[in-house]
Image (tube, rainbow, N blue to C red; front, side, top):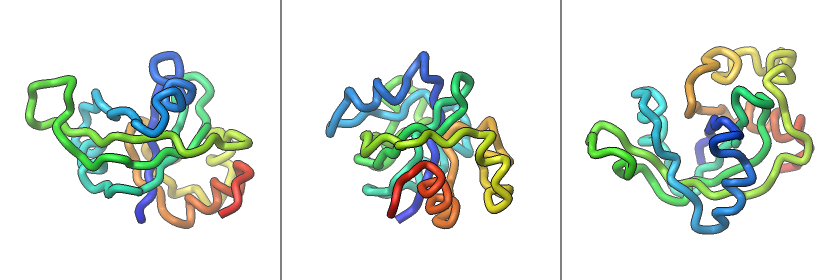
Length: 139
């Protein structure tokens, strides 16, 4: 299993929107960055990800699961762009902020800290475990 982080502006598509989609999930569409697209192409069914509110809040608020592997993005006819489908798994009991991550020495190399603008990022297993503990989730 691999781990990821999905960024979204909460006033456009927030955790509550994702939760409302239930088991069906929702396409993670509209991504127009090659590195983020390639990350989605690498995802497998069942991979887990953090749901991150960007701009407003700047915090990890939940966990999602990849429920459909990468396919063409339905919001464009341009064949370069793909997307996965994700579904909400559970909320983060205590949201983990970007500042929390920046102040944790063991997360200094995390993509969220180093590559702040990338909308779909890989997360290492160690980073996953640390953030889950910080957020009040036990594995």
